[in-house]
Image 1 (cartoon, rainbow, N blue to C red):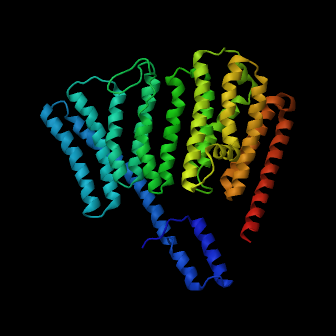
Image 2 (cartoon, rainbow, N blue to C red):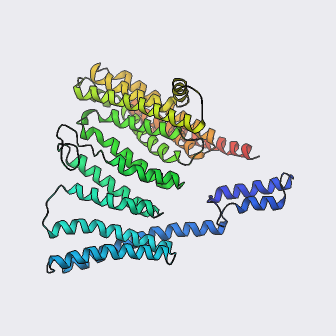
Image 3 (cartoon, helix red, strand yellow):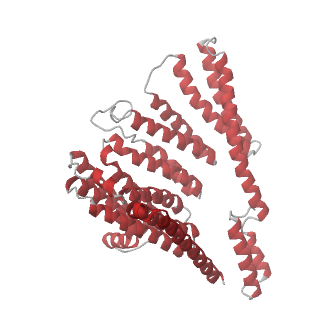
Length: 461
């Protein structure tokens, strides 16, 4: 029986702890060995890493082979009759998929079957465009990418491989990007257009949801890490679809806060929270940096409060309330809690004060800057939020004993320090001031590194 996946760092820690348990008589040597045997060995870990690298290499090779086959067919494409062209297209797709099923279920060749399925998905997509070219069909070209993604979904769900999910995510990202950015005025809908509705590519969540559910059921945080930026990308494109371009920073910032709320709704230390936290942190941190400059607030101030701004403000607030309510319901069901909905929401807001505050701050900015037009207060609040965000990340790293959130918080605080020096004192301090600033930053990093090292030593002592 193959052991459970574990990182090399965690296995080294587990080996040292098991040895210590056996020495102290907490467990016998046989029991310590049985505990270690529950997880994959160092050799198995090395093989898994080699397998992942081989899968990536084979995926690139399959892509190149697919291009070679398409170019070979295209060399004599114009001279072929239509019937022959269709036979080649459908035979290639069916033959590739049949090869994948044979390799997987008859010969139990996992890697080769994944490559075959990946090639089949590529040929299926190429077949859509080639059939359209054969019959001279002129249509809305993003629809072709949409149908390509729809055809890949069953393969991604049936074949346990990250490669097909990566292809699906790429297709959906391309589709919603070309649909919203390229055709914002066409109107929303499918099998027809409704011009009164913004072209927001609304089927994307329904197409991405099966893959996200699959990732949770298969215990695959890496797959979750593919779908989270896809959904964030779709959300951040909505201001373009709804003509909120002038004030899109507010909405994009709220997306970062919502991702952090979802991240912190997972159990403590859950690997599934990491993708939401990473992308939520990147988006929120970037937007706060923008608002921390007085000049940007001046640009956004006093632009009036058109109907689009009113709608955007209410949408951000409404999405925040729906997210908090949904998270509370899920947590109550998972924990079988008898706490009322109202108390559950209050507890959630108290635990997740920073993500909720970030979204609330975006709601405030979206109202204050266009209507009141006073840029100083938003600038001050954005700088305070940057400091609070840095402290929150450091505290999160200490709570979960994880170095990356802690280091991110330290670096973000140092970034805020450098930005404010450049913004406020750059001309006054000159090179000597910059030298002092970098010296202080280096000393701070050195002190933080020593603190983290001592904390780890005390924790494992």
